[in-house]
Length: 291
Image 1 (cartoon, rainbow, N blue to C red):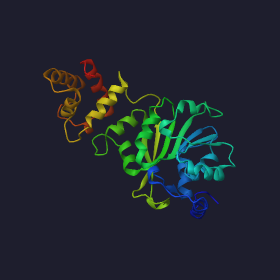
Image 2 (cartoon, rainbow, N blue to C red):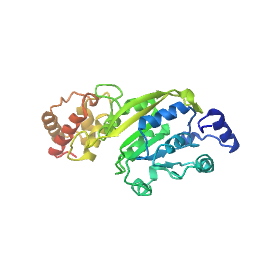
Image 3 (cartoon, rainbow, N blue to C red):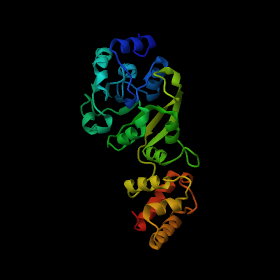
Image 4 (cartoon, helix red, strand yellow):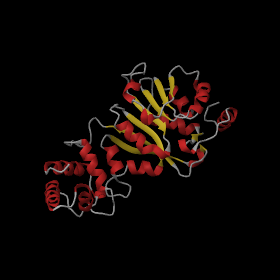
């Protein structure tokens, strides 16, 4: 019987006296068909290493271990360690790391794989309350993850995969799509979790680009500009940039020249600009000495 089988899940939780902690955002998936579909979507085989975040009692880990070269699962809740030892102990290619993923030195951890040169994919059911910090930590870690196939709140998945000129499009869309191609693979109803969350989930598949979507002179500045452009969505790009750089006559003149060079109207709003246009704008602002 699979770990994810509802009867077995309940039996495991009751035997260990486990209670859910809201602070960890714990919702355990109990549908084997969906778990199998996640692994299929991630195209896991024996030539891939996997990082999992928040394995819970090991339901997804079990499916991953059957396909992957090796699985490294990060679990912050030490109450789950004896459960995972029981449910996954027979796998020799699974390692549970009792560590907060946000504090993990991922470059060092990757070298602990038996075959660290294999492509590394992140496959996980992410805690809703820290989905964005986890994704940004992974993207900024310097580890060249080949792909993310992760479950998250549907609303967040929609924001990450959104296109310009839509309400969901924003700085998060740009931050991820700069590095990765992102698309929603399928929707997961709230009814297949224990306990059931208040919202539906989505599986988001993100594949690393061979190179960033646009070439910019300064990545940190590029992200600074995109974040500022959406600081107050109802305001124009001009007003949001003034809030970032100041409202002096000198700044206004430099902004005017930068927008002109980038071919962007001062009255435009951030959601109207493509990632390529943001790249042109960021470089033009730098040329004007704004940083």
